[in-house]
Length: 245
Image 1: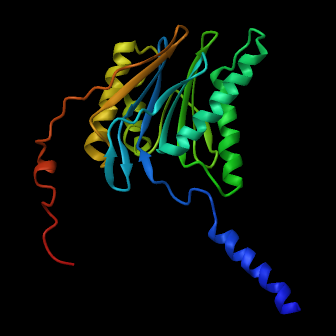
Image 2 (image 1 turned 180 degrees about the vertical axis):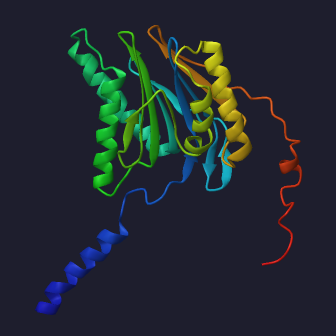
Image 3 (image 1 turned 90 degrees about the vertical axis):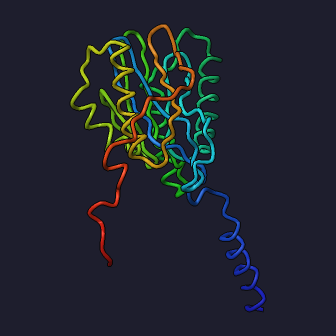
């Protein structure tokens, strides 16, 4: 009897392990998002590549989305998890609108909400595999913040995810200032995206730049940057590496 009783328990344990319905690792991913404050609002930039492993499988993935009236979201990482996050946010904004009390969520509230969602999923060992950039303007106050897949979050004048955190942030530390015009901000973001295109294998030369001000959100049509590939390091990358192990 003891043997017969223990058998179903063992089978149920094995079936529960084999039937895991969660993302164990990301499949289709997007690379860096870069965001800055400028004189009138917030600017975000992201390319449109979707990588299946090391293969750039998709080249028209939009990773910049408006959230309600006052916020703009950009995401790196798993594309399907980003779609899930957008579902959460659509429900949040709908619930907020149903109150019809003249109030609406600002970027700070949305950023706090995303922080709790990411940290909650992390604690369930079922994270959403994304790094997020959330920017917005409400009542004349500009807001820009970031949150990682484990809930690490911060607010700053310029933020970046992925390789952008290593390659774009140094440029921004040198060249960003709070009185950037829109044209200067776009030029600075394009410089960052060009460096990422040269150095990040997952980046593609098709990007969008989005801005948000008190008037609302504007997301550019996709476009490409002018590039130059005749640098000596690109022409012969193995110089100095001759020899055997």
